[in-house]
Image (cartoon, rainbow, N blue to C red; front, side, top):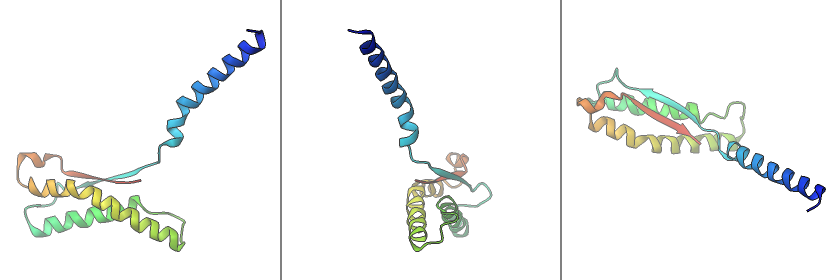
Length: 115
């Protein structure tokens, strides 16, 4: 192996390592999240359950907001994102409602995320 071949191999290995290390940061899609607290609600009542659902829907709209994009496509994408975010948060809401008034309801928050 000549000196230039060794140098080229070393540079190629270094470039491959750097690309491998930095690739996940670029590949990962940014995710916005919001925590919806409900410790002030009585989830055993219909009003409390409705209030939690409304809070989750509002949080989904916030995390999916395409600030500055006033196009029809942007609005459609934000609305679809919010719908998915609410659907993903609903199992947490249902669990909170099922555990209302029990010791298992100590968490008192639902996580809403947009991708």
